[in-house]
Length: 311
Image (cartoon, rainbow, N blue to C red; front, side):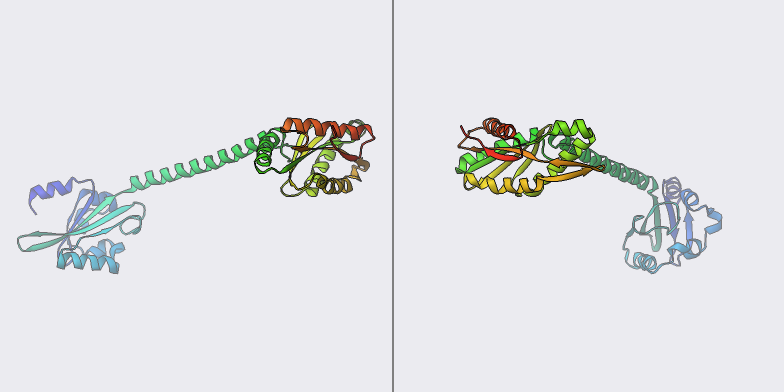
């Protein structure tokens, strides 16, 4: 091997092994010493598989044979073929044939890609961190959205979400010439409950009322906490005005019961006012106002009942 080629191979930043047809080591550059820890003088003229037993595999042997006999080139990726030469380093291997005059030599190049693998792993970790952060942000976004649109105590839609949905329902009713009902519900004697049993008991009563309203309404109905001890229910798709009575009757049956809190018996009853689009108004505000008036008529009559708005 001439001195120029020797000098070039000696200074490459990759390991280079040159073999003869018997797979004996003819050349072992400085970088191979760095990769393996084996000095050149200890490997020259030795069989490749004796020096590097990790290469003693059928597919490596086949590649070396094909390279020598036919000039085929082979490449082995460190991502797939690990530990062939060094257990700690990630090395790509390239096998090729070199011809000069009538002599044929095999060249094995060992390219250290450990830093690239480290960088890739760092990028993967970074991407995983980004994915985790993104999930957390989405969860927080959902929490923020829930805080913005849902009542924390009862889990019901709050006033903001109610109006957002109600506007869509009333527009649908206008387009399709259908009836939209609205119930305004107030817990009877709620101030007395708070004063007598405490605010924690009051909160439990509100949560129980929310549960009653969810259980007694249809899947298509929208139940919301309007504020304090007031609740609203949207009743879309009512065929006739009197059909609200079926829902009101279910609510009354469920609400007329004793709720036990810390050994105290608390009676739950509700006053309900009802209004309808288009009979009682063409906007949600009108329907809420008139259902509220109907509810106060029930309150003034002693509560625990349901009444629709009458002009």
